Image 1 (cartoon, rainbow, N blue to C red):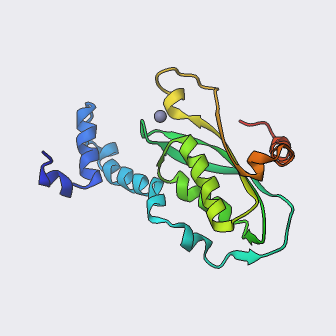
Image 2 (image 1 turned 120 degrees about the vertical axis):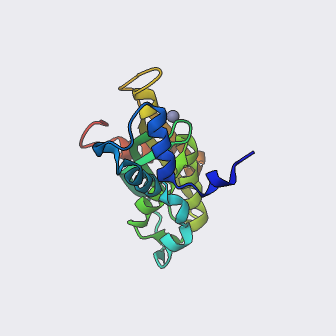
Length: 196
Ligand SMILES: [Zn+2]
């Protein structure tokens, strides 16, 4: 049974208990404000739960007869893995092939942040971003590639510090037409700098 008292406890209160549990002294100078800072940080890192697509996209959809691929690559993101609550971070490459609508380019990184600032698994985040763009734009296709490194792999367990994880979600023309997919992949692989 959940104690009702536990429900009213703040995140900072729980952090204080966590510090005790790991053998620390939460009253020492360096830690005394840490629970409050940690709560603030966690609230920011999960602020995507309070965001919604409609208010991000609001007013930034334009009717445009455009049949060229739109690509926004190297979008930095920082997220938290839902299995360990440890950061994973990397780059997202997003492309779509418009039908009759385009979206303000700055909105795409904001959609990425909305999903990244939640507890995530990389595969689901990649798919959710692709599906959101499909719903908003009704395009001929969407492609999303996510390259990430996970602290839960780098710092613990297998300790593979240089391995990256790549996930992708290809919808519509990006799934059905090899030509479209290849164009996206070649645009993404033209790099000014190597990945990490
Ligand atoms: Zn993890």
